[in-house]
Length: 80
Image 1 (cartoon, helix red, strand yellow):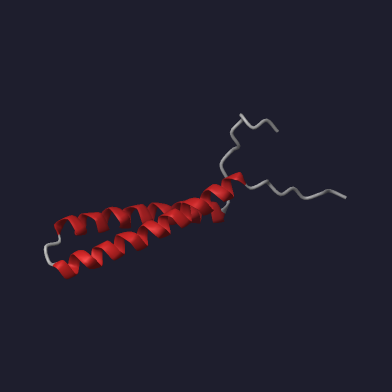
Image 2 (cartoon, helix red, strand yellow; image 1 turned 90 degrees about the vertical axis):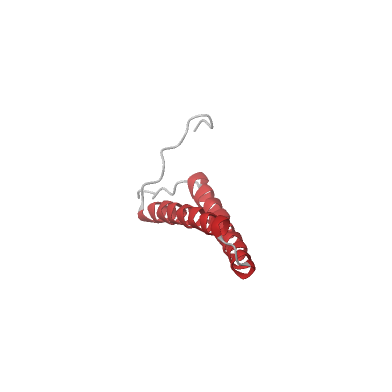
């Protein structure tokens, strides 16, 4: 109704799955950064750069999906 009132977060299964995937992706990104920082072989460094970029793209995708899910209009069933 009023845009300054925050809507209650979605609690259905799809929303929770998005949150879980986002958390898992954040953990994977953290691990990929750690591996990159500890790599000394040039080929490993290249592979971790690609891995970090791929995980960042997945993170951005999931974040956009989550935001669009949160801002989507709720669907109401009409009665009779």
